[in-house]
Length: 341
Image 1 (cartoon, rainbow, N blue to C red):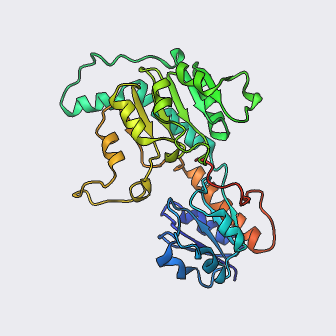
Image 2 (cartoon, rainbow, N blue to C red):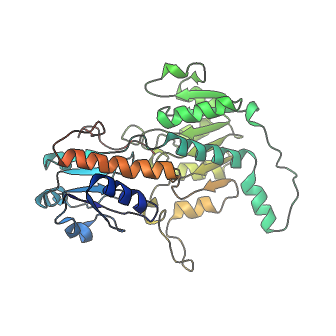
Image 3 (cartoon, one colour):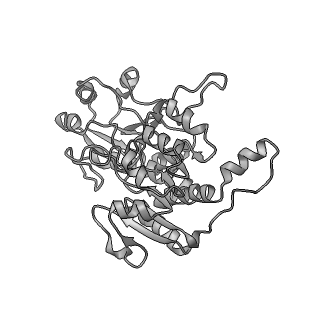
């Protein structure tokens, strides 16, 4: 029987994997661990693999050669992002790579709405006061969405959904993208980054991570924002120069931030750590200490619809490629780095 290894399978993914396997007559083995040097041997005997993780499987240049030696000819990512894969090395070893470019734009857009609502209604500050039995309201009056200008950097599938949500709620919406989608012309106004940053009351990131967007939001960009504006990042941690974000918050150059992703998150988000030990991530510690910052542990994708789509599409693509077919989600080796969630 054809068999597929599904790595870093969490409890919520397993029923979808089992249902797909039953529907297709394929054996799917769900491994709870990631694919790394110490687990590479577990791929032996499998025809294909589905993979989801936040760190590269190996820093050894021959990793893909050894993966190929096990007979593996494809990697199906259960994510939009593919920055953990060395596409050129995979291609050199005849390993084809697919991703899930659109598992559920609504999932990420809805968390973005949640983040922005928490920021503009000062929920973190009210929570902080409540821990001290301070239930006063003074100094924390909010503005309503209809008064706000929402600036979206990266208006693809997710950014478009964010734009439609805030347009429907009465906000003014600005968009910036390397390829403007003019189907949205009645919903948002296309502007340059400089204008977006200086006008927006909320700046939310929904862009790719690649060499052109790494640290796109740096000290200069944060300094362009209004001191009353909020910053949201639910794309990839690497699009933000995190020390610059922390500095902008400390200097009160911006009013607050919400993030679902963070540089260096691989050892933090998605893991259950010892509650008695300090967290070994200075970026997280600095941001977590602020009462005007919202942090969620990379959960924007984590809805039932999105998880099902990620599992089923990755398995569909795996089966297609190992049986001689093609996938519209195959990533060319020159497309290096990553789509955002």
